[in-house]
Image (cartoon, rainbow, N blue to C red):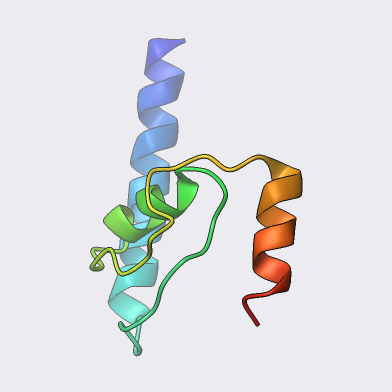
Length: 70
């Protein structure tokens, strides 16, 4: 099980490194209700510009929040 986890992480990092090299606009934020946004920013080697990094917001509250964002 640990080996599969390491393989999965290696594949994720390789894929995200490929995406990071292709990024043309690096001034962006990821809005996520889980810590996944922070993980993506880390893997993309981007600055953490978002107030939503490393937090958890319940689904209903998150939907309410983003309704008034845009």
